[in-house]
Amino acid sequence: MTETQTPPGATTGPDRSRRPGTGTTATRVLGILALVAVAWLVAFGLGFSPADRDQEESVRILYVHVPTIWVAYVAFVVTAICSGLYMFTKNHALGFDRAAGASAEIGVLFVALTLVVGALWGRLTWGVFWQWDARLTTTALLFVTYIGYLAVRRLGGSHHQRARRSAVIGMLAVLLIPLVHWSVRLWRSLHQEATVLRTDGQVKMDGLMLFSLFVGVVAFALIYVWLMLHRTRVMALEDALDDHGLEAALAARRAEGEN
Amino acid sequence: MRVWRVALLVAGKDLRIERRSRVVTNQIVPFAAVTMVMFAFALDADVVLQRVAPGLVWLATLFSMLVLVQRAYAIETDDGGLDALRVAGVDPAALFLGKALALAVQLAVLEVILLGTAVVLYGAEIRLEGGVLLVTTLITATCGLAVVGTLYGGLAAGFRGRETLLPLLVLPVVAPVLIGATRAVESALGTAGAVVSEGWPWVGLLTVFAVAFGVGGTLAFGPLIDE
Image 1 (cartoon, rainbow over the protein chains, first blue to last red):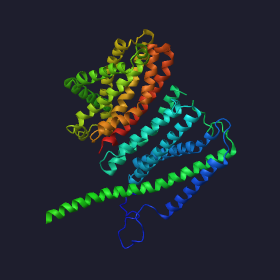
Image 2: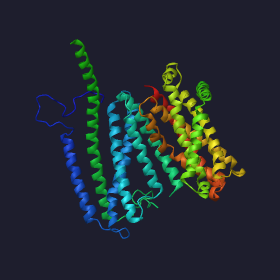
Image 3: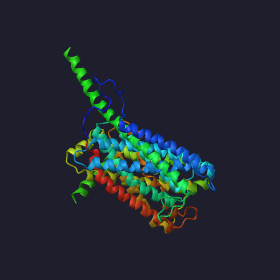
């Protein structure tokens, strides 16, 4: 994937009918599916699913709060795997690095969404925006850690320098998460117990609510994939622009010298 | 062990530079001391200060560590020292361990001074039965901080904007050390009636942290600085 292919839309040839962009048929279909899933989520989350006995209407926040954090976890795992693939495969393909970066960006976005929505939910059910509880604190640290990762990606240098540095950080971050979680658990433990991902296999939730949650997971997963595809393509374009920009500047200087 | 011999040489070199330049004694220790005085201004109450003394000691250590790490790499990158060491065939693992060792020694000295400051300024009391726990905590926490500092310092070394990037990278990573070391020192000092035995699980956490990042850093340092 180290190719310097002409990315979709970047052609300046005779094919003027295609608008420049990162969209392809696949992403358009995926985008429409994601929109349908979101519409479905709105219908089930705000309409069909029942209100909770204790939390009443505020429970509907769950359908955004939980799917976003699950997808964010998956995104960070994808970052770690792609970082590993970059580091340990022979040809060190930059494609893996871009996928790792794009996944981390979307992960950070989703964690931010979880935190904001969670703070609003906390205000409604606990009476405060923030509690120094184990899961909240861990999530906040996770958020900051990946902001750091994104900052490392913008340090500069060649594409492979960027890829190597961020791959190391991407893998170390995965090492860090269990340590942070363990320390914070020991430190504090108000957040409700996990209701779906329980170790005893018992799900304590109303069927329709569970289904709405499932719709939420599907919707956010589709959004994740759609954003991933576009973002990696934009990153490939950015890299190509960097390479091309340098060559163009050199050529311009040479041309100046000749005149 | 060749790696350790080289590591000791690197550590010796770093410490010799520090001893001769006196940046640690003339700037970093006073900075840490000023931080401790500033905490007292911010938390204007004797009782509160005694209660939070262990945490403030570690916070001051973390802030000073950021300065120490910048310094440890500034002396390398200014004259291309890091590249020279690599060209001379120094094993990156030895380089990492050496620099971490030098940083650990400086941090340990700083922590002892800060603890002394807490006793004098905040009225913290060191008790005999918590002695072993206190020393073990200082050693394990210092090792954890040193390896993380060295690893992330090496990453940011030689780039524009490293002064601002380093705190962002390092502080979330060392959060477990801050939590663990603070609780362990509270137990050792008996702050707010804490018992010594409560401190040991935290030392376990600190040890796992130090070992995990020590091994991770030794392996990752090569690819990081090899540009």
